Image (cartoon, rainbow, N blue to C red):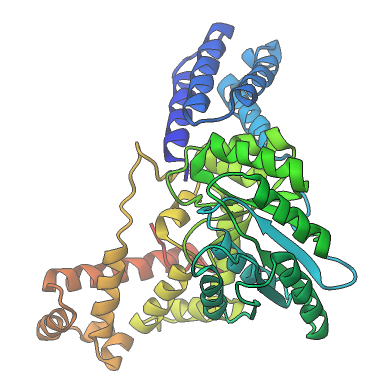
Length: 443
């Protein structure tokens, strides 16, 4: 996520850190680097100009330059301004109606991942204890309705459609009536997209909005398209008065232009972000957390939330008990690996840890295949061997290597890592309760 932007910003800050005394000239040099970095990231030039001017005004005072640590103060100013640029204070994600169903209409250009996003949003709504209904109104794109059906099937969620011969506004109205009759408290409408903004598409979206009066009209934007996304957002906002934005493909090689520009240009909040292909790879957008990630400072709060979703309180307590009583075996190790995988791709998890920036200049070895080999080795052990690894003599290790398609050296390496992990975690416990979800280190 924003690898190039993050590494260049860190390089700018490192130049300041290497100076014993920071002067106004040094600040101007850093601001020039910052301006160039943001423009290269395809951030709107007016946004860049205002952003840099605000930082300059706050960075050149005596309290900053003659303070104990001027570089840290300047970084804090940049962080604060970045949070403001991304939306400032946290806004309400969805305004749920007091008289259900709440209607959410998704709009956007073709290719932004709108249909998949509809499914992701519906999955998020179920976690909020809502009962969502997906609605297919894209009657033009081949297989669009079938795609939404498949998304609904994957998420075990119902999909309402009326085929390709009924007008989209009529489908939306019928879906709303169906939702009321069948106790669905939220309706997510997937509208048709085009390759570019055109009058016909805008008129159709306007008709749907007038027919069902959605409580939220959200624009789905591909974060990798830069200023094109911002221009499209401006056009959509003029016609349908957007309530917010959902960014997709933030896990890709997004330069950052759309993310850093869109809030400032259209004045509407970014509410959610898609961070992967899976339906669960979807999260609320928090300006302060995103600013921290962009600056390479990690995102501890999101990491903790992911851990709490993957690990239950009971699991954490049981693992803690087994570690303390030396009963922790490979079955438990395997269970922990499976739970960690639920948290998402390891490179994303590691990028949330402060100081472990996964970027172009700092490469962390995240070996997903290595995890698969580890699982294969454990599955090749007998139940007794998993419970008591001390039984694994030379002949047993050779058998396990053969059964898992690995080498004896890899089996030995896993056993050594397992022993070291147990020893380390007992020391980390130190007689106190260990934090939930962090029994096994992932980096």
